[in-house]
Amino acid sequence: MDSLWALSAALYVAGVTWGLIVIDARPAARIGLALLWPIGPLAFALTLTVLLAASLIAYPAIGVSVVVAVCVMWWALT
Image 1 (cartoon, helix red, strand yellow):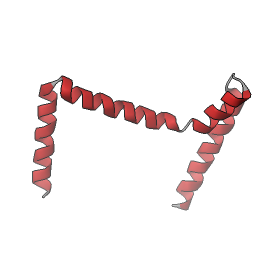
Image 2 (tube, rainbow, N blue to C red; image 1 turned 135 degrees about the vertical axis):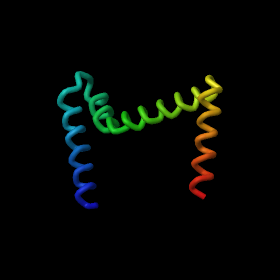
Image 3 (cartoon, one colour; image 1 turned 45 degrees about the vertical axis):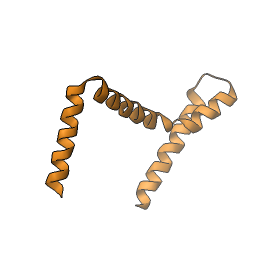
């Protein structure tokens, strides 16, 4: 578990360093973007979640099939 944290910290520090060196912006923007770069994958996952939820409402056939699949899985696992 400690090696996972060490790898995560090393990856974060590498990303911050890369962001400080490569980004063509003012120093304040460089520091802000370098420190906040890990939020990108979280924003991607959130966007996909919202799109999936919207598709369940916009396309009723998909919504019904997802509800049926969840009910069958719940029934099978209990």
